[in-house]
Image 1: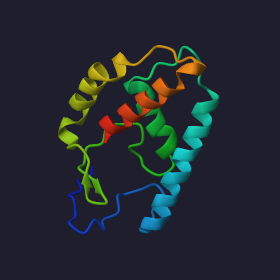
Image 2: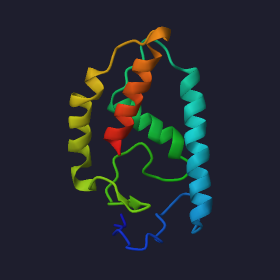
Image 3: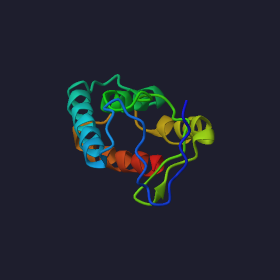
Image 4: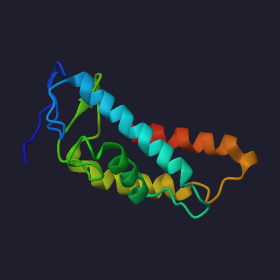
Length: 131
């Protein structure tokens, strides 16, 4: 497997299934993938859905399966985007397990319609922790 170093000018394009070197094309494909995942998973929300690491990896897979071979798996390379350095790959699995224990396992099991403020707050908390 090819290893990628963070390029200071961030012009490096990750190896992708589109075989594209166009940053714009990759970003559009990522956006479309996440939109697809959002629509699909929103229609599949049921009371028994548990937001755990497997669910998060499934979101990643659904969103990026047509763009990257590593979709739905923990990455093995370090990456950054727009000056933001994502967590180091070598600590990712351990960090995600800690995230599940400290954050995901403390979310409500069920959200009632009148609890939408709690749901929005929990989504914001999860998103902030993942970044």
